[in-house]
Length: 276
Image (cartoon, helix red, strand yellow):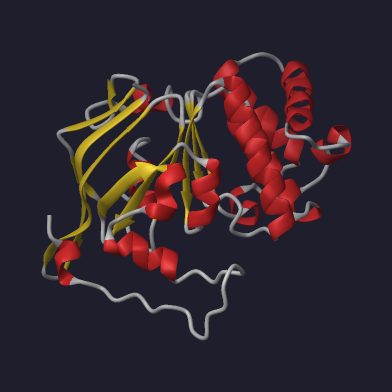
């Protein structure tokens, strides 16, 4: 098992005491594609970032078990975590405009990631950067390697981000809404690219998204989060037939071309969904 989470709880201090942002979350992941869906603020990103212990310094994190390849993440020191972050587990963020260094070329940033985790000389790292840009299906990798982030389109920037994360040859890829800043056509291209790379490299993938139809077609399993809890976990192929009222509510809020609707359904929330 690559990742195992049991009874994860993440709290933040407030004026009235500790407030739960994530509570009683249990998940496992092997060499498969796991989707985590839910509304903004449901705890998706916090749960995924806890695997790398990339949380705000004021976060209070407890769990019965939180491991990456049998490494106890909560008790590991920074040296041990550095051998995991980037090297064995990569994180792709939402918008490359805010993730890439604006004063370094794309090739230099990929080469830096390569050397940080694999060592080697500058020339070797530069060639590795070109090879990685080719792997993420960039047609003129030498030209893109010399470009700065502001000279790249959103789709090209996201491909550069993926190339950086693949440089150390990780075993786990966490993609936090990797296509939310892209148009529909480029979204499809990036997702096909991620799927192909995950399949060829035998990696585990956690895909965080608001798009339920997307994860139902792209992932193997789906965890649905509400108010910091996993309320339902289903096989991706069964997502459209999910039973929990919250999941049903999310699905029914989506517009559809298959039948005409005068109004979209409004989510009717039940206080019982908040129960532990």
